Amino acid sequence: MTDSSAKHFDNWKEQQSAAEQMIPLVGKLYRDNGVTIRIFGRRIQNHNTIDILKAHRYSNQMVGEYLDVTKSLELLKVMVKMDLAPSRIDIGKLNYEFAKNGTDAAAFLSEQLASINTGKGTALDEPQDVVLYGFGRIGRLLARMMIERVGAGNKMRLRAIVVRGGKDGDLQKRASLLRRDSVHGPFNGSIDVNEEESAIIANGVYIKVIYANSPADVDYTEYGIKNALVVDNTGMWRDEEGLGQHVACNGASKALLTAPGKGNIKNIVYGVNNDDIDASDTILSAASCTTNAITPVLKVINDEYGVENGHVETIHAYTNDQNLIDNYHKGDRRGRAAAMNMVLTSTGAASAVAKCLPEMKGKLTGNAVRVPTPNVSMAILNLNLKKDTTVEEMNAFLRDVSLNSSLQDQIDYTASTEAVSTDLVGNVHAGVVDSQATIVDGNRLVLYVWYDNEAGYSAQVIRMMQDIAGLKMPTVPAE
Image 1 (tube, rainbow, N blue to C red):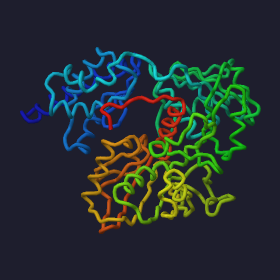
Image 2: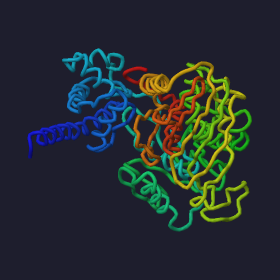
Image 3: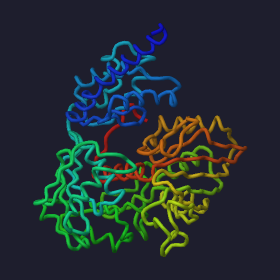
Image 4: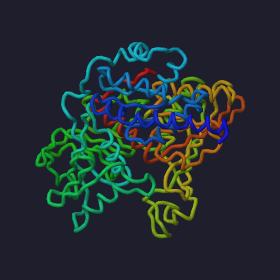
């Protein structure tokens, strides 16, 4: 082995060793303190060594250099000795600052984490019971995310799912679909089934499976469930009358719809208009995946540059309301085989933006093309701005927003020249700006925004659930 190759290999082994040592420390902080460790917005809880190394290398896109994993390990070793409150700590940002300005890790963290070095505790006085009404694509992802987030500071508990059926083998099939997913991969943990009690036990979380044909058939108090937040991911009811059936159930107090709501129901894009959520609200909507993807980006662009008008074209993965082969469908064109055709269809996302961002009312048109991929979509924003800009200025602005704003959970950013849709599977941001595709001509902007229409949207729903439950954790460093 040459001197050069030996040097690189030795460095790799050092970084790999540091990443391996980080894993139990990240787990301990989460279990004991309710602290979630992130690297430039990417959670590393329950991740393996290679995932942690890749997360550190992602820093090159964000700050122009690779993070030293050994410094992250050094910081973590100090953190586990601190008396930290439930929070989210971005060790990637801390690592970057420590490398520039720190010499003593304890002194550095004492200053940086002073606001949360206040003692172990919980973000909720009483646990919040959650029921998933429906267990389809979004329902199962929500279950995975909730199970993954069980920890000392997170008292939001998945207590039950409600589904139709109840035939022989149904429970095993539900568990199997939670265990294996063709798009998102295997469940990270263990899943058992208790047939006698009609329950799924996932990583020690006991989830009652309730069979019912309508909300009126359910009394949650029979299962020890109280004041539950019922998350309806069936899409069967979208108005106050229909969703009100959930709130009327014994043991339920609020309902959240994972689809656009109709009538006077508040449509919330978390990060944009979640301040509209009142404690007295009993029925809320998390809007659509596309509305969640484009609204945060539209907000920051409108705030900084002003938007005169524009058009949104959505290139959307097919969904299970389309047909596998040509067959009858009430919607125009959607009856044609989803995996064989690009299907031109409509989208209400452009007009729905105004429900969450009123200043955009009447400024956008929209259309959609369903394409033969099972997940990850793209929104193309063609906007006329109120002032001129350049590609470099726009990308620098959006990169900074993704790193240092209150919308850093919603807006992600990639500078890769090789990114394609499958690279974004599992991304939990509402949307990802593809900076290499940005086009600017004076005041005309064309922006390409990827989004995992399943995982990214589900993460937004989780954030909204936490808000409704009063589970608000500080982020360090602050935006």
